[in-house]
Image (cartoon, rainbow, N blue to C red; front, side):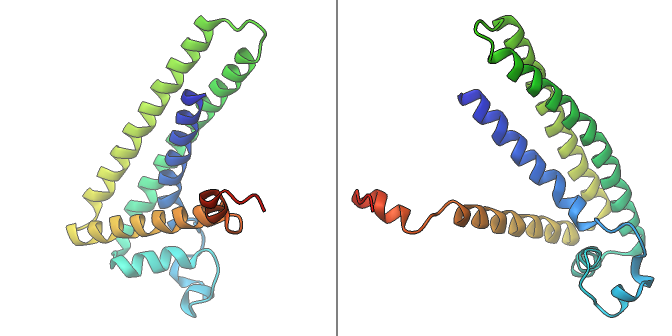
Length: 175
């Protein structure tokens, strides 16, 4: 159970780290020439404009980042599909009355290799971003990522806090 929890936690963390750059560049159409960008309209493409504006990115930097993140997305898609297939094989084997522990351990080892590959890919992507940006832009980028992560953490924390659960738990009230 602990291994399964660790795997799930790793997958969630990886998914968050992967989606951060992709969400910033979710709109691949139009660019700054469309009316929504010119008048500051609220559609999902405004995020990339705001991101570029906050970090003071040049058009060339924006193109390089978009290309880098697209490449990372394609790479990670394959890794996610492999992890999903391994998770399904793991689940199918572990629910058997007498699971083949050699097979379970083999699948678990494959998942660990893929997670390591995912971590390496994320690091390489981050280093690519660092090469594209100036030191000041990269510091701002990392601050934006941290702020986004904190916001997601706080939203998730609130989501699981039902009523005054903490108070009830601390005081032993079962109301």
